[in-house]
Length: 493
Image (tube, rainbow, N blue to C red; front, side, top):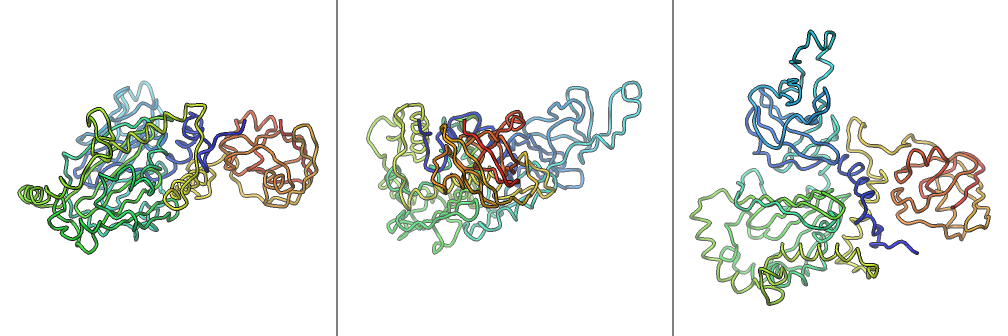
């Protein structure tokens, strides 16, 4: 039976624990992760924790006012050192055995040191540092020490963001939300970047923007999006805006990028917001929103709400009529509409009758492109953002020069002689020769192209789908294998 696909990715990428674990290791443990807003840490001893893939990391301000990031692991037995959000005075103490560290991460106190650890060198047991950075008013962490600077990671997308001066805005704390969506994180991202659905699912809830004139596309792994105001909304934007404007009316519109992986921004004429996507399980995702607005009086917000009330009453409508409390599509709430669509899609994946349909050429193009970014990132095509190059790597990462080779390939009981040019994978060569070997993702993560190498040697760029035992037993991923010897003998089992 042919493997079910979601255009570029296999369906199992949205349902299996194996894929989830690979993404946690290869993507979320190897990129910059959003941790909070800059104003979350303003005093010495203040700290916040964040999960960055497989790593729990905390940011703390030391006694000199410097931000530092450390892996939240006591260097004695590995117990989590601190929890959630808080403030300490001068030290960090592990609750298990009271090993104590200063705010620079140095181990300074070990209880019963003379009796239990007579020759311990405390200078060798400090906390493991991570990287911390500030960009666009947000705090970010990276599991690697001395990672590529966060501003460099986002440098190419920067010119495509909104003209907002985030530092001049203030948080609207009542709008802070956190909720779970019963869907894979990529479904949530794909919904966010699906331009085709804006005029349909949100026909009554996002009609203040002109979707037909949207400008969008990927810049590296990051997605940029802008759409102008609708004509009716724009003609009296000072009156129609739900809150005081935070940009010049000539620049007004929706700037809605999706930064990789899963860092959404909603930058509009009257608010600036984060939309942070965190994978919790193959079919469960947490979304956290924080909103910033103009730094002005409550009275100004009240007046603006009164002025704009008639516009919003006339223009915001549910897609379908019904019980708003029971039916998200009748809620006139675009977030509820999105959650419903994502969760219903995830449910359908369990059906043996599920089959993905055609993908829209333009409006759904970003969905396909994001799937390709995921594949490419897992395969290492974006390189590492770990400046010290100590991040997660494929099992075989040393650069090698492959050679021209001839392979005897046994497929479905028949033997074939295939020429394999240097720097071409076994799979590519087999396909070019007219064979039809099994394959799916071609990124080394699905394992469908696995075969037994009976003779010769190959190099694999990313054998993620193979266990160490399978590699030891002579199995290869033909999509990743390039010849190192002139003769190969391969059997597809």
